Image 1 (tube, rainbow, N blue to C red):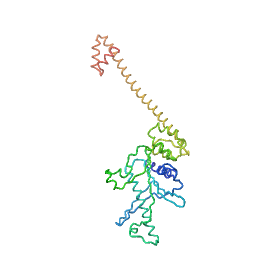
Image 2: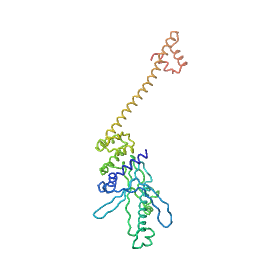
Image 3: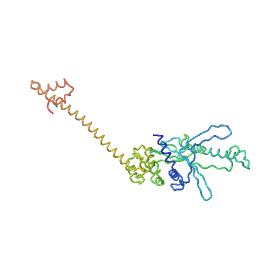
Length: 342
């Protein structure tokens, strides 16, 4: 199941429209600045060799979930951003460190690439000793890297949001000298109705469905009010099914899924199952009750018959009751009730 979640959420976030929507939400408060067609795929593998003079050459490799380059073209100038997405089905309590590592590896790769380029190019000006040592010229610049964590769980994200949150030390006088790293997160539970309106693609419906997946009443209100749930894309419905565990019936021959009907079918099945269980339980209780009542009725009739025989033989009711108690598991109180026909 975990592999299915990973595969489906990765494919979902790789869609240029979904990817752009997420970063427009994060960076531009929902304004459609980043266009899907302006995004370019980047290799998700990040490999870096620690650079310096100590001779350490231990390669470090990590794979991002989704990584794209955004080219901002304004007039004749072009600016670049590297945008990465990390999908989480479960809460990750060391996510700031993980995100920081991805970004650091990317910056390290950029420095290494610059050094390689300078080494292969025949440049007129010789590098200074500092430039030669680092491989990075005074005029070189890095491309900003922004990593966004998309959480597909219904629980509240209670994990640290920054490197400083993970420290045991909380004194500001010390923390100001320790570099911090703050992660970016989109989490369903924290998504307000105003926030949701800033999302313009199926990412909105996925996040809201996850948010209300534990509340059947609110979930039903959501799918009934949002028209997109009446004809949801097949792949989006599969993501919702995988990350929430909702038993949605999806016909792969159909191009879209009516989530309203799917939820109604689930509720109907729940009602029918409840009725069936109630009937079974009621029948079982009825049989037990009937058996108890039948046994009691049989004992009552047996005792009454014996009482009549013993009375005809001249035995008193008190003696009959005592004899029944001595020769059975019947209490004196019950024996008296049976003998007197009560």
